[in-house]
Image (tube, rainbow, N blue to C red; front, side, top):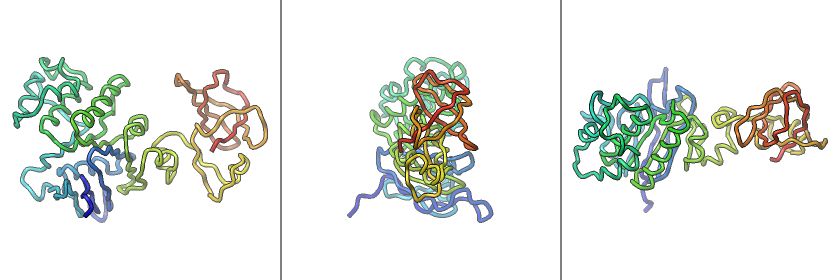
Length: 320
């Protein structure tokens, strides 16, 4: 007999026929598997997390956690599952309390290894401060610690990296990594930034208008997107027709092929190349993103060449 999945989401629908927010969502998660849910604003990401946590009632379908049905608000007086916790991007902390008080009031179990949680969340030095003396990133880590004190098995994070600067974001990434590695808590998160999702995720679900339009590993989602919508969620891309691909030396039966900036390079040679004129150069430190016009199409090319200038005519070759 097959071992049941840690989490099983089956045929979830939410809304009415006039406006379905979620449409037949189904996927599974193994314990300690890291899943990212990506999609445009309004695609149903937050609603899906709330349904998984038992905070929203699906119109149809069910969520099973460790082979037991997750009850929604219509099935029990107090919504939520005791072993699944959800952190909204609009979380709040009690005002005018010290951090240690906030965490003490959250600890109803009295047997949580608090020091380990505080260490993982990087908040030991904040315990005596009041909540109105904290930065946004500090408040967020305390809000996460307050949830972890409840000893969950699954942590759901809704847009945890939004509105954070790079330094604070990197600290939070380390915290989320350690929650899985040191506290043995499975994580699922919503995010739209490829820099945050691609290195961390084991699997990515891409939602559009309430449907899963692609589901797979970060490598598959990035390198073989199923549509321009999916490609655009994870960085710059170009759509090339078969005639253009042939000119670049690649024969394909596909009407359109999605190509990434790193698939191109600049060459002095002619033949199996495209010629364009550089319009903009965006400097990113270890590389540049070069924008250029090739006939009537906009191209993006990733390059480490530092001698390029706006206005230069260049030849592009494809490594695909």
